[in-house]
Length: 121
Image (cartoon, rainbow, N blue to C red; front, side, top):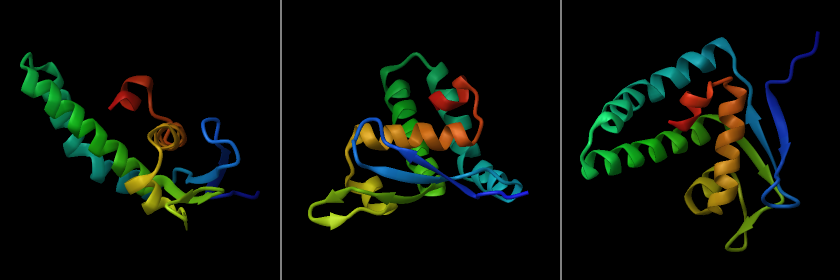
């Protein structure tokens, strides 16, 4: 049996860009769960609130969680330059095009086998 610990994706939003995301393993699932557990609970609590401030806070936490997913699961990027520099995961997270980063977040979450409700967080 052969097992690859990453999977390659061709971007649908940025032609010519490819990226690799980590596949789930037991240790990686534990690590990811530890990273997002508390934020996820807080986000759900705030989403249930009715105030505008609660909704804004929930949206902020959701974006922070997306950044954590990318930091955890985005392994490498090819075919993208940002400000003249070959883009790696950290540069994509900090300065990359939002449509591409959202595509990457979705790919990482898909590798985690998250349900649609969990992906919305």
